[in-house]
Image 1 (cartoon, rainbow, N blue to C red):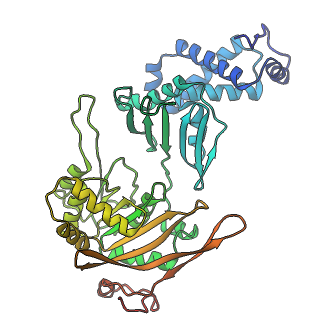
Image 2 (tube, rainbow, N blue to C red; image 1 turned 90 degrees about the vertical axis):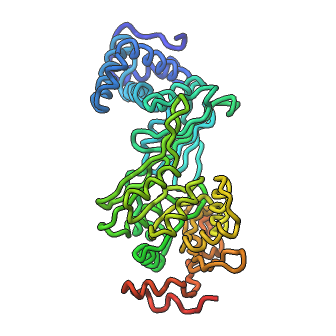
Length: 449
């Protein structure tokens, strides 16, 4: 502790204490050294097992009281706001996620990425920023990783260097360690948003128009099968949540996810979550297992949070055998790519099916593909709403019903454009009429080609 010499008496005033602290080396290394000292002493003073058994509020109160006592006894020169900041940092080290705890708590931040001790990035309103937050070293990052995975009974080390986990609030965490990530342990946290966006919120953010929302409401009401397609971080799950709000409360809904993110408002919802294998390599439950089991649970609707493997075939089978109105998401850059990805996932499942048979299943099962994109200015928009028409030869045919047409950028770098209806009449328009759903008279002005 060469940079600090603790006073043996209390300062005459809080201001004197802060000035003393600043004069004796208030820099990041010195503050880190203080945190380490307090952290180590608190571990000696407090029983971690007892803290784990306390409610979060009481555990925090116990650590704050202990930290204040230690500072008063051994570091009387640290007072005022500096002391409060130091206590907060130590509480985060003992109970939270250390340096990134405050970033996680900041509401506008949607993602936090730790690339190295001195490289912590965060996403805010669709854009990436380099944070001033720093870890001391790789060992510091590893301590936070252990705090994340230990309560889940998961292991992460050189023999198992990658792990997906979930925080208590539902946020998704991905961890990857050296030697797979040679420079440093890496943490990526996708924050869970407790307040899910509604369709009205998406309209207000100009992610879609009122006209498009009414059309999608009608599609859900008449039980069309819908796939939401988009890249990473484009808002597919947000859109899926919004679409699910159109499902009547009288229906039984089965959701299948890995991990759980959907928050449906209906009263009759059964949530299923895939489970990885245990440390012994046993007990794995895949999304395909859950889709198959869901068919035995008398579902009115099946929602697959993200189609990423062999469950694609079982989902199509469900859609084609009486479970209409199902929803799901796929990682893809266009509606055509979304269908190709589903086709590839079925092929990778090892099913000995001809390509044409797979495409016929896709064409008959899926009615609408909603494509979402994150534009250069960070905004997320529905860029196309496409209908699956059927087959022509060996090709699945599609047509766009709505498009977002980008016209340029403004002086602030914001994307300028407009949503357009193509005017084409979808082949399922008769279902709207039968259900008594009335859409704007000028929505479908042209005949399908």
